[in-house]
Amino acid sequence: MKKALWREKMLERGNWNGPIFDQHMHLDRTNRFLDAVSDFSKSGGTGIMLVHKPAFSGKLPSEIRGYVEAYSETISMAEEIRASHHLDVGVVLGPHPVAWEKQIEELGQSRSSELHMEAVSLALEFIDSGVAHCLGEVGRPHYPVGDETWDKANEMLLEIMSMAASAKTSIQLHVEENNEETCFELSQLCKSSGLPLENAIRHYAPPDVSADFTHGLSATVNVGKGSVPILTETVSKACAPWGMETDYLDDRNRPGAVLGPKTVPKRTNELCTSLLSAGWDEYDVESLMMKIHSEWPKSLYGI
Image 1 (cartoon, rainbow, N blue to C red):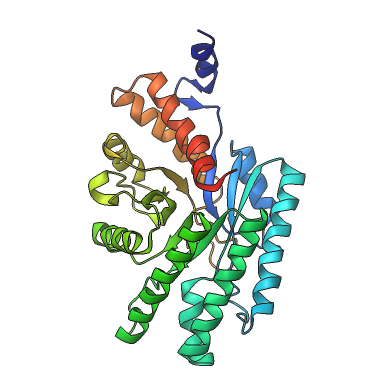
Image 2 (image 1 turned 90 degrees about the vertical axis):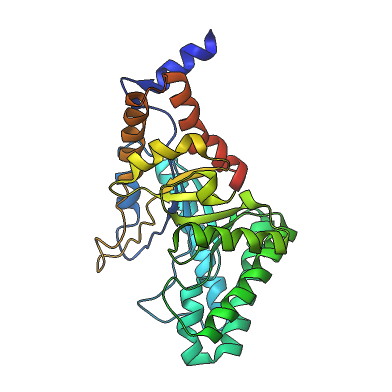
């Protein structure tokens, strides 16, 4: 009985009053930073995964010292958010595959690839020390590249997955949008590398979370417009953890490029209402929301 009463307070007339977790957000001290965090918190948000933001508008690191500084800054921002807003904040560190591809022209493929793998090793050191919680976003370019570049990206991704498997950490994957085929290819790389499928998290994933689509991969779903009906239709067919994300960039020059910090709280309530309208009972909706925003983040990131 106590459990039922506690759950009743979490969902009232379709409004979710429990934890709300954005699993992929970038922040920047030179942009909105804590103002964006405030938007998220005031909308009901309680936790984020703060992801290393590459300096695409500036100069990308050309040596490992640059990654030490960038990763340390991400960790520092996480500490400040915890102190100022009392949110749960996990840290995601890793070299972005687009940064690797862009630096091929400047450094050559050999040196760019060497630096990329050094940055992966560095991120794993931070994770092992406990100040970071996930490797990412790593993967391959999301846009067309030459065969040589594509093959090298997949070669490195397989090695990165093997390193993550050995470190027993999860990874957030930046990949192209090729629907179910992308998930299948990633699942095969997981099997070859020894990385558990649920530890491979497809970042900015489509809202189809059915097992036939994900092939057992975890997912952080891009909860843009139109995502809720597809989630409502496919959630009962899911076989792996999934969550919600905005991929918020915190970039004044690209205000509409991705979703705003208020989006995950908004979509959470919309999904609750949609599931109830589809015939779900309140207990099952509450159970799902607790998995999305508390239990699965804990299992994937240890926070």
